[in-house]
Amino acid sequence: MRHGVVLLMAVGWLQAGCYNYTPVRRSGLVPSTYVAITLTQDGSEQLAPYLGPSVVVVRGRFLSTTERGLVVSALAVETRRGDNLEWKGESVLIPNAFVRSLEERHAAKGKTAMLAGASLFCFFASYAAFGSGAQATTPGGGGSGASPQ
Image (cartoon, rainbow, N blue to C red; front, side, top):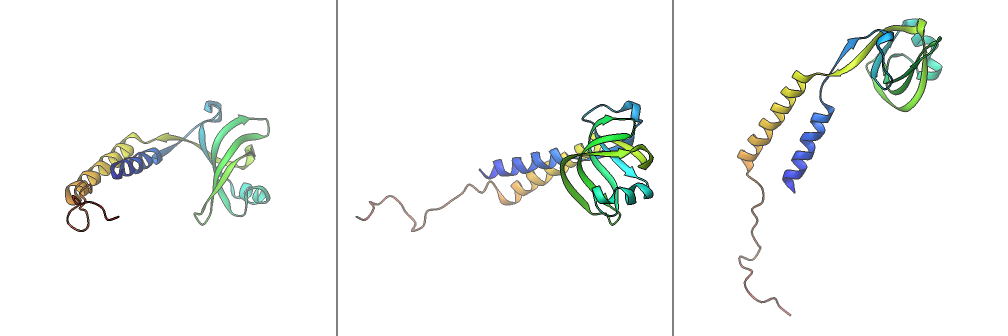
């Protein structure tokens, strides 16, 4: 059971993994691509009633391009202070004039491999230090006697 919990935690860390963001052109976007849209100062101010105050980055899945801008399924926004606020996938239109930069998220294979290696090292170091944890003794020193009735 204990090994299953450790394995589940390791898989969770690997799923979170590490990502890099690379600039992408609007023409290169494919629906459902995970993107980060950095807003202009004016965009941050104009979209405050919809996104919240001081939002500088909108992260989510790209849905489509319209003549007015980019439509994304927002999953998170980042404020100037660095706070990350979770969204539930609401569709948001970001007007073209408010887009300072557009980046696409990619898995960082090197960072993820390093994280996996470090996780395995910690797992085996913990196992060597503490053992399997499956050793148990019965209280009272025995257990071969008949139970009282």
